[in-house]
Image: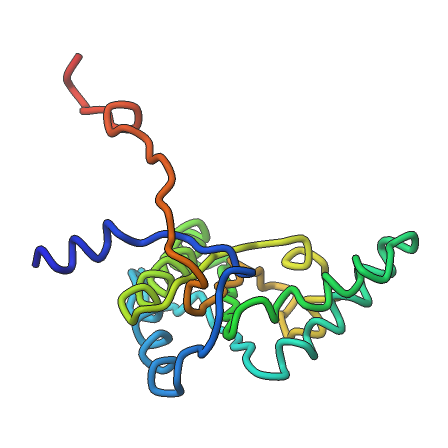
Length: 190
């Protein structure tokens, strides 16, 4: 058990631009997605799904991101547009976690949204357990309907995050974490 706790305590986010290949193998990708799908899911609704971006598909999706960026910012420079084109190509693998939360007779929508967040969190931890690093991001294109339509995200769905996965290009440094005294209260005590 201490090995698992040490692993959980050592996870850090790594910027996508600092993630190198090779990315996960097909078997490792299957493991990542299997772990990410084993999260609390009240009512067994599976209120999330995954979109995998690997290989040239990362740049194909980037073409849409760049085009929409250009439409939003007609004054953008060629370098800025190219930067947007490479958004999903910064890491060897990107997995979008899509929330499918919606009204339900018994299961509050909020619980469904949290389940999608748990899937993204589990994906990040699974990557770390397999020796990869990850970064969970939602950037502007996560909210742009024109991009979402091309990526296959339905109108009733939302992006919970894009999880960028690869190997860290350099040793990762931890950031300061909040002291427990600042974030924990005990009910019924002063």
